[in-house]
Image (cartoon, rainbow, N blue to C red; front, side, top):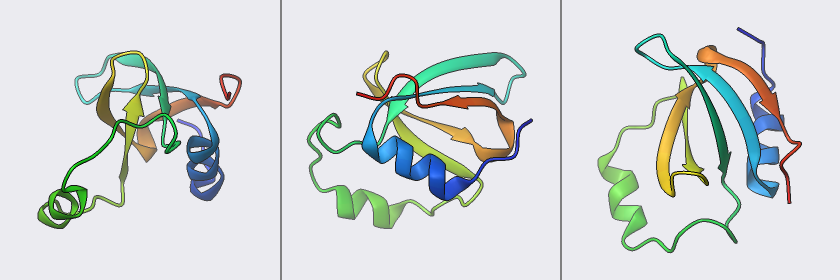
Length: 88
């Protein structure tokens, strides 16, 4: 697994679409195009209520999967590759 600068990754995700390759919990590798860019994210309703119900996990990050059109997450320690080549 690669060592990531979480601040740089979060900044890149907020600026555009990034490519993340990581190992899923079941051991399979997954390539995901994802973002946290507000202009790409779907409209949320009652997001604050949802966030308050869910305990944050400092070992993982939730992102919008642009290929699947759904929220997904990956664990920081499972990332094999991170690229901003898909940024808009």
